[in-house]
Image (tube, rainbow, N blue to C red; front, side, top):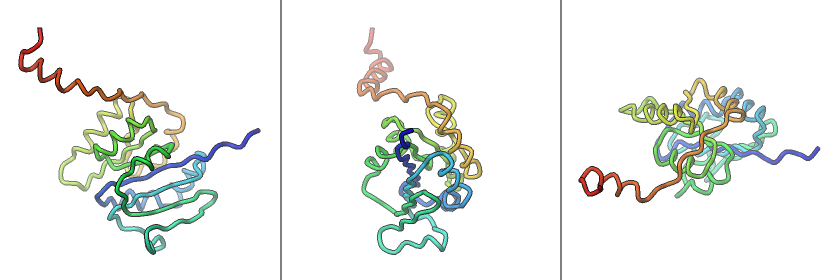
Length: 178
């Protein structure tokens, strides 16, 4: 039997801080869930989030081996596109840019809205895309279950970008179409 290929997960909080998500991802239970579901690499973009004291960054990143899982944590990069492309699964705050980049790349996505933000637009966006089957909407507390279901639940492909859609809508609204 051929060995299975490595599986990589990316966790991102974007340019903000989301302490609860980062703290949860680094718990023994969630790290074990990644392992149990065949992941061998976990990359965490922590932004300005507070890391557990045992995960203090020295320099640009910290890397650890935990029960067969290579965990790499760093704060920021100019772009996440390359990391998204390399991932089999992305776990993200519900920032619209990260959601669109991930869905357009065809990657499996779990979205965890940050309910500490001023308005709740993240929850609304996550719920709408979850209802359409494009992603899994989760809470910090349900993250382990979402990781497990992401390996068995197929996603509905996100429609490709249509650069003419906006113009058509404007034309229709202005009465320029027949």
